[in-house]
Every structure is written in C-alpha cells, then in structure tokens.
Length: 388
Image (cartoon, rainbow, N blue to C red):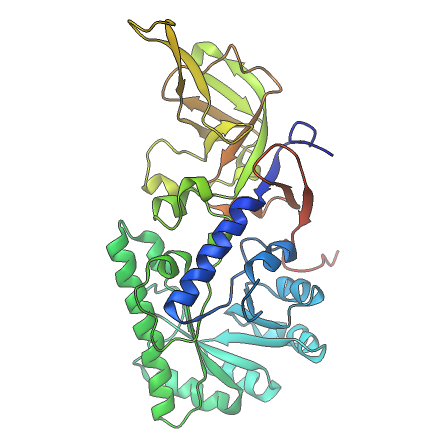
C-alpha cells in the first residue's frame, strides 16, 4: 500500500476521518434546524465524497454544472438541483438527462428563460436575491410574480444563497445574513402562494449561514457545500476548527535557502490557486499554511535560557508567501529548521479556498489521519467533453 512518500506531488490529500466528522456535524445542524440537507457537491465534485455527505439524508444533492449533474446521475444520484442560472443553449443537454430519469431542477431569475423552461417541462426554482446582489430577483418585487406566472406548473419553488456571509467580520453578522437569507426566501414563497402560484421548495444555505443560523423556519432545505472539506477561509469564519480541515495539498521541497529563511515547493498557483480570501482573517496566510507530512506544524529546536536540556522544540507558523505557476515560496515567523528540511522533503499545505484549489486536481489520495493511502477518489472537473 502506498504512503504519502510514494505518490507524485503536488497532490490533493483527503483525510476521511475529518470528512466524516464534518458531514456528521452538518447533518446534526440540519436536524437541529428541522430542515432537509441537500449538500452542494460543487466543491468536492466526487461521488465518493457524496456518499459520505448524503448518508442518512433524503438523497438530494446540489451541483453547479451540467457535467456534475451527468456525473452524479451516473453514480446513482437522481434528485439534483443545478444551482446556477440556466442558459437556454443548455436545454437539450438538460432534457436528455431528465429523459434518462433524473429529477433535475434548474434555476432562473429571467422572464424569457422562465417561459422557455415552462414550455420544455423542466422543473424550475426562482432565484432570489437575499442581499448578496450577485443574482436573483427582489423577493418583494414585481418580477418574482411575473416569473412565477410564466412558469405555471413548472415552478418547483424558490432558491437563494447568502454568499455575502463570506464577507462578514464576525459570527453575529453571519447570523444576521442567515436571518436575511431565510426571510427573503420565505417572503418570496409566501408572495407566490398568496398570488395563487404553487410553491413547495424553499431552498437556502451557505456553509457559514448553515453553521451559525439560529432559525430556518419556513424553509424546506439547505445547501451548504464547502463544509465537507474545509479551508482556511472557513476557519476564519468559524465554520469549523483548523483540526477539521479535511483537504490539504501534498508538496515536495525543491529548493532550500537558509540565508533568506525560504523554501521553494512544487505547489504553485496551479496546485494551490491564487485565492487570497483567508488573508482577511490572518495576515500571514499568503496562499496557504504549511505543515509537515503529518499535517502538524513544522518544529525547530530553540535555545531556552535556564532549560535543563538547553533547547526545546517550538512549532512554527509557516506559509506560502508567493506563488507562480509551479513554484510556491515558503517562509515562517522564525527561522525554519533547515537541518531537517532538504530537497525532497514532503510537506502539506492547507489552502485558502478549497473550491478553487481542488479544481486543478484530478482526484483525492485518501488517508485516515496517517500517511498510508487507503484509497483514490476521483472528481468531475470542467464543464463537459472537449469538442476539438
């Protein structure tokens, strides 16, 4: 059986024990809030991860591309919500999936697209803007009812996403976004019903709001996703502790520069992404926090005056401070232990934003808290087959 010393770097490492803990936590939150959990698979993009995330749930999932919908349907998932505004040119592909038996729901905030989808017979959720201002209609506006009337029997419900929770500086503001998310969705559903338009599904959720929400009354399902794997941004948002971040990038040292207190590793901008979201929470995070092969802080011996041994081992905070395509430059708050780190040394990097980081990797090398690789789980990347 291979270990983390044997696989080629850079590589994506998934700790299945942490994944399970994260999925159990969010399942508990859904039960506590009295709402169904429809996990968003856009981050993990893996049927193996989905099996853990949907265990004990009703079986529905969320995706962000038709390629994901096709992939997950081929792995036995039928109840699928495509939670990105629908493009008319994708209609034949979506209908083909529905004809195979997929219970596919799509979303729109556009009257002409709603008319097209109703004529085609696809189930549709109206996208609501709850304050993020990325997409969606005003829950109190006229366009909501206009779209509802166009959809007629094709209307499945309403859907919103509190994406502005990612910009909140503290937990209380995240709770406020969660309330706004709930209120916008419930208001939209109530207005449709008052107008005589059937509306069953009231769908909400982001990882921060689902983690910190106090009340989702009136909603039927929540759709968090990044909680499964976690990242430094979610740690900063207090969505999960650092010791539950399940996914790291395994990398090898390719350069050692003691005079500059610097290492070069083979995980650069492609392997890590250049997302800097977590820097909002901690200045010295750069493009990721660096640990040893066991995902523990790098340690070095330091002299301590009066100590019987003359030295102790001190954990270092090390981070990737610069990233080019295939190079990551690492430094730390104190001198690195160059006596223990040479070219070829394996390290692990916790990324800022796992959605972006994982997108560059074909799959996961799975461990159970140690170095032994116990499995390899694939992913669905991209948007479809290349037509070249």
